[in-house]
Length: 174
Image 1: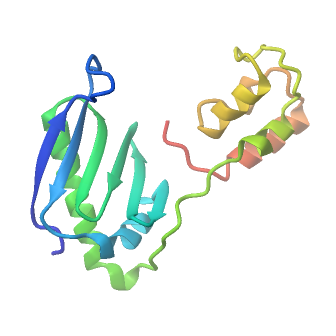
Image 2 (image 1 turned 90 degrees about the vertical axis):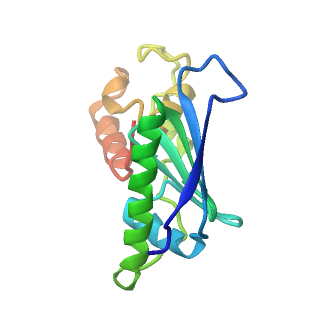
């Protein structure tokens, strides 16, 4: 077992203390650096940083970032939710490490849609029929998985199909 213990710190974000959600930092008593590339594969890391090493996951509307000596989680309801997520992450880290012989490690994040590639498929008329002020705003939202081909009434069937195919290559956790 690689990770055996940690201490946690729960707080409201300093940038906006009126937020209802909480943040949590778990200070790890063991260094999990070597497990990060395996964990990245098993949980499908959204973003992987090599220096300093860290992997970020988008899971159930939360960002969870695992650093060598800490785990950061945002948008928590309460301390009970923090405990559940931290224990789950501890199990995932240990499972990835225990099964590393069967996993091909990766230091790459998941592919992300490119806003300009999406924009190329849009009519670029800024018609606002989709509810957005411009096509670039729509493209930005589509790149995040918030909008899709059905949300642009001005798209013809061919472009709808191309946009659907393009966006279908990516995983979104919205």
